[in-house]
Amino acid sequence: MKLRLSLIARIACVLALANFVGAAQPVKEPPPTKTDAPTAAPFKEAAPTKTQSPAEVAVRKAASDFDEAFNTGSADKIAGLWSADAEYIDEDGQRYVGRDVINKEYA
Image 1 (tube, helix red, strand yellow):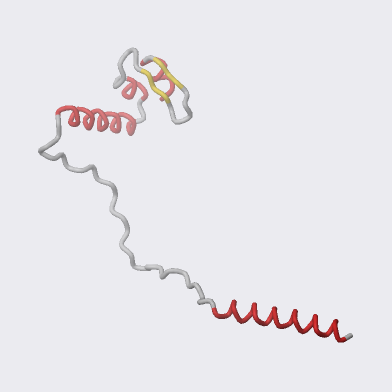
Image 2 (tube, helix red, strand yellow):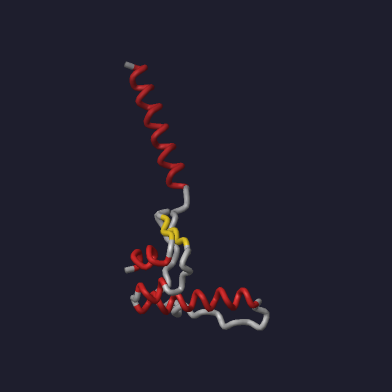
């Protein structure tokens, strides 16, 4: 009986100590939220700088032309930006070769 009481006392001490140690840890509070944080401005394309190379200007123009064609919803305008033997690989890895095939993909 004395052994059983001693065992229960030891377990009670361990649990009390564990509770004490857990209570000593600081409480983690969530970071404060900003309720009146400014909303992000819509993305604007950066103005061309004077140091742009002709290749960079051409790439930016091609991207702008594609953006305009895509936003019109016209597959013919989009396909017109590709060469006759162009190759397009979509986000799933599907490969499309030729302007006509690319046109069908965007249609």
